[in-house]
Structures are given as structure tokens and as C-alpha cells.
Amino acid sequence: MSNYIVPEENYYTKDHEWAQVDENLCTVGITEFAQDSLGEVVYVELPETGQKVTQGEPFGVVESVKAVSDLVSPVSGTVIEVNEGVLEEPGIINDDAMNEGWLVRIEMDSEKELAQLMRAPDYRKIIAGK
Image (cartoon, rainbow, N blue to C red; front, side):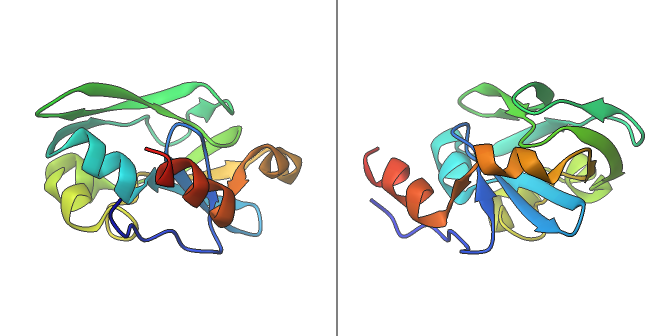
């Protein structure tokens, strides 16, 4: 197992998205583990600003040299910002999946949904078993 960065303050999905929460705003990306599993990311498809997303439902696609994977929303809400940088240069995700490689910012409908996501210790257990 590699030593992936798994920030304590983030939430995680079983589909390997991370969610950084600041009040009712949720910044979403894919984890280093997901990026490493996918290999070199070459294309990203993201929703438009203003689009509604639903927890557990796909909101976009990430394509790598190995596979095409759905991006699954960790929360329900409205997309208020899209990282144009990764649309123009998907390689940012390969270099910095946990920071500069963020994908969307979502205004959450309900913070209660966060209870259905994993915290860092649980996520580390999942990727340690891979």
C-alpha cells in the first residue's frame, strides 16, 4: 500500500470521492487512491454551474488511459462552481488530486447527509485492504 494523503477534515465516499466541507459548501474531488487506481487522467466531464446533484448519483465522468469512471456526488445540492482548470488540463488531477485537482463546489441541501459519508480513519481502512 502506498501512503496516500487522506486529510482528517475531509469526508469520503466508497466510490473514492473526497468532500471538504465549509459550512454549507462542499468541495469535491477524487482521492489520491482513485487517481492512482485510474492511472493518468486524460479527460473530465463535469456538470454546469447551477445544476442539481443528488447524493450517491453520478454527476460527471473521469476518463483515464485505463478506464472511464462515473463521479458520484457525496452530497445533494446545487453546483455553484466548477474547476475550469481541470477541464482544460485534466493532468492537474494526476499531480494534485487532493487540492488543485478539485472538481466542483456544491451548495449542500442538508448537512445531515454528511453522516452517510466516511471519515478519514474508515476510508484509510478501505484503501489499506486494496
